[in-house]
Amino acid sequence: MTKNHPPLGDIRWQHELANAFKTIDDLCKFLHLHTAQLPVSEAAAKQFVLRVPRGFAECMQKGDASDPLLRQVLPLTAELLQMPGFSDDPVGDKAAARENLIIHKYDSRALMINTGACAINCRYCFRRNFPYSDYQVSKEKQDQALTYIKNDIRIKEVILSGGDPLLLSDQRLADLMQELADIDHVKRIRIHSRLPIVLPSRITGTLLAILTSTPVTPVMVVHCNHANEISQSVADACRLIKDYGITLFNQSVLLKGVNDTADDLCNLSERLFENGVIPYYLHSLDKANGTQHFEVSEEDALKLIQQIQDHLPGYLVPKLVKEIAGAASKQSLTG
Ligand SMILES: *Cc1c(COP(=O)(O)O)cnc(C)c1O
Ligand code: SF4
Image (cartoon, rainbow, N blue to C red; front, side, top):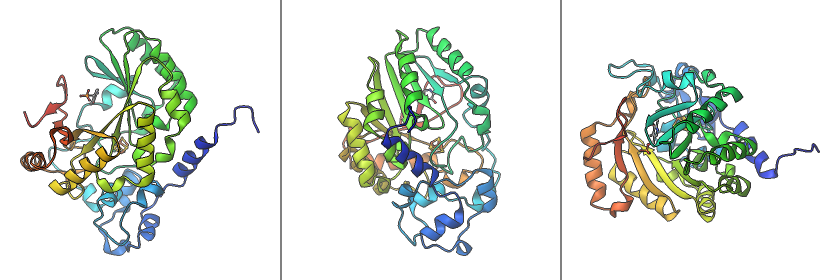
């Protein structure tokens, strides 16, 4: 055994990550689906590779080609269409992020990119067309990012995003937490991660102890789009996060064929809250090339919010927002 042998929990999530589905054939075979009868596309999978952790695939209904979780990850021929109004960088992050690791659009919070990688590749993601290799996170770039934060006292909150920041090792996260906590004006560290949902084994006591080890307040925003994503393991992970006193929110993307009915959205909010998670944002789709088949019109989105408001307490209605390049905050569509 080497001296720096990682704790056991560490090994399990890394194994699960390595064992994720990586081809259309393997995933479809697991789900008893025949690829010949589906509008799948190997060309789309080449542009943005398929990656689906097994635990997430286990939440799908076998034999159901229109399963809402499958739709989020299956490469389709529809992705190859070029549509007016869609681009490779709809929110203007690409240019910003390549130069340094900070995206500072809203004055009191700065977003810090620490990895370009994710545990799952969501077909609707606005980062699908980003050259991930440009996100090489060097020690030098990280130091520059920390200096940037140090030099702007308006920054009260640092958002760790990516890619997925919880793909960093425990050691790197521990170092980063400490370095951020050493900056006086940083009061909160917010972690935007899909791992509690798609790779819940990442949520270990060791990780949570690290996130709560400094005087800064940790906040976690998970990303779940459908109630079926919340398996028992996911529920347990959320419970553990709450046990450590971390405030837990969810953001979703409104996606056609995934969660674009009032029932889907009500069930999602109810299921999240049962597990200690507060619905925060419902994002309208960022118009990235290859995502047009997920688009829900603004008119339909507003109707949906009206419908769910009739069924849910106000605190379970997520805020419908849209990202507009250059705006001082996310824009609420409900006024
Ligand atoms: C979404 C986002 C934030 C966070 O916005 P909140 O409204 O505080 O959740 C911060 N920075 C960037 C660049 C973002 O895209
Ligand atoms: S950044 Fe989020 S939405 Fe995009 S692929 Fe990664 S996990 Fe999915």
